[in-house]
Length: 177
Image (cartoon, rainbow, N blue to C red; front, side):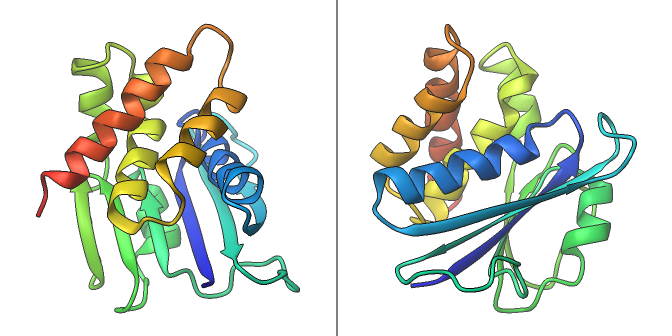
């Protein structure tokens, strides 16, 4: 089954890393095909950032996301630029601490930034909290694949913190009925 996922937020939130981790989990550990692309403004840190991943059981012939079916939005500007026009059939995960707008499609509010700060003590893992919510909500990749991809992708010495962030995101998404 094909999924097109668009991540958006601002530079410094780990938007591109999130897409890389998701693609790695799919391609290396779940045996699927994956392609990742990214866009960020000249402002880099603090400017709008977007990254996309296509995951498919079949080879991917065209690497550009055309109509995402899943959105992970971590800033208001990211929502306005990349998520406000999401099709009704899409699923969206919003960082409810950072996004004021709400889409017409199905969405879940995940307080990733505040949970990363309050529960985990590091706001920098908010993106991993969102990845946990993504796995729990969509099942796009297996938990085991995501854990391996996180271990491969985060700085040495932060693996346990990031795995706790993944679990926290899964717990938040699981509690949202």
